[in-house]
Length: 212
Image (tube, rainbow, N blue to C red; front, top):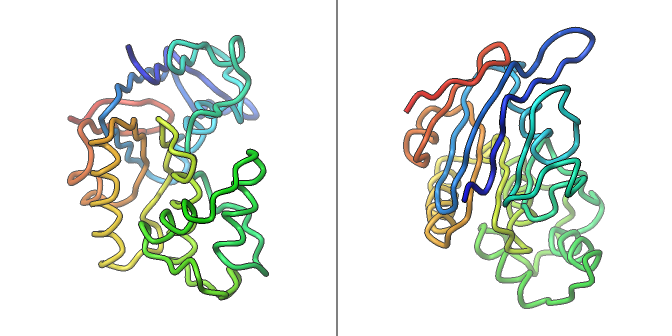
């Protein structure tokens, strides 16, 4: 069964068609990459899959459930779309702990493990407002994975990472793929897409075409 299935999806804003009859199927245990210039429709597609926007036409199915019929929002996913709104005057750990508790979870050891996995020091009291762009991106990845969801929707997940950080996160995403996660990512980096993705698509003027 397809984990994510998009069928003939169209979406317009002010009579401008941002998504034009887009179809996409994603299976478990694979990484799918979408490339395209800014404004091509990648982020809008991701937001529609997550339930942030309603389609004008077409359907989206998640694990056999129809979006806007069987569910209003995608809850079984870790999501990075644009920069998360962190509590900037608190540490990375305090941010993740707060978000984890919102789901009625409390597990200090788990959050420590997640932060270590993405290369952040969970014992650091450094405020997020003093984080580098790369550190904030690592924290965003930690937030996306901390609930061990089966789907990851990642818009520019390597943004701001240095060379070492990119290598670390590539290896990390490869590990998640082996665990059976379905990963859908957009990236400006052709190298990231080439290295990581099982299937690659290009978005151009709202149309999606398979590259490989």
